[in-house]
Structure formats: C-alpha cells, structure tokens
Amino acid sequence: MQNQKNLIQATADFEHWRQTRINKHASIPDELRCLALKLLEEYPISHVTKALRICTTQLNDWRKQLPVKSSAPDFVPLQIEPDLLPKSDLSLQLTLPNSSQIRISGLVSLDLLRALIQEAGEVK
Picture 1 (tube, helix red, strand yellow):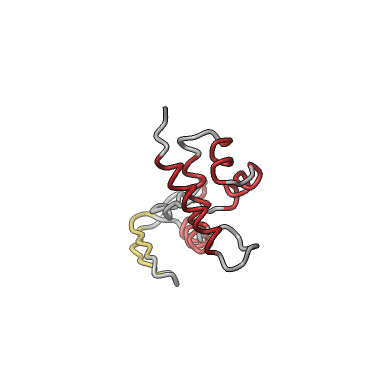
Picture 2 (picture 1 turned 60 degrees about the horizontal axis):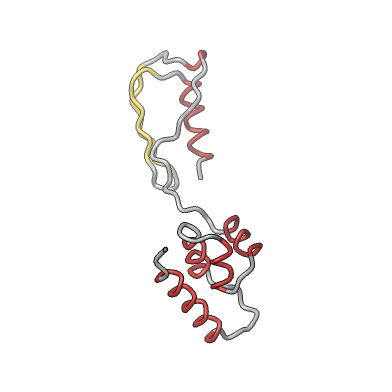
C-alpha cells in the first residue's frame, strides 16, 4: 500500500486554505495546484480528486495552465545553409540588450552573421 502521508498533508493544506480564504470564490493558489499535480505521480487521479474535493476537469485544466519550469537554453542552434559557409576571418563580441553576450571568431560569412544576430534578437 502507498504511503498516505503526502495525500493526508495535501488534504489538510486544501482544508486550511478553504477555511482561511477571504473570498469564497477565490481561485485555488498555484502552490496548492502544484501540490495536487505532484500527487498524481503517486496516486490515481480519482484518489486525488476525492481527497482534495476537486473535480477531474479542474485538475486536468491545471496541468495545461501551470507553466513548466525549464531553464533557458545555453545554446541556440542555427540552421546553416550552404551559402552561409565561412568566407572571412572574424573576431567579434556582441552584448545584447538583455546583457547576454555573443562571441564569434573564425571564418564567418556576412550572411551567417546576419542570421545569428537576427536569431539572437528573436530568442525570448
């Protein structure tokens, strides 16, 4: 049998929120939503919804709404076309408005350099 500790604690957290919320129609906080979604790793959805007194549709909506935490990529890949092959030696350092830096050295064509700058400007 699974350890019920996490489910019991989550149930208590949801009940505490229900009893202490100011507005009866307030949205369930993201922390509690994340807690409910985390429980799905250990328990069937029916156990989670019954214990927390939420509906399956609500829980599935939370899956879609909550942002997935991921780190920004350290490297932005570029598609290099044959006409963008290196043609001249270059040494360049760019500092973007967001304080990111790009260092380029070696054989780089102007078209490749333009593509790199354009791609870097579009990364968010």
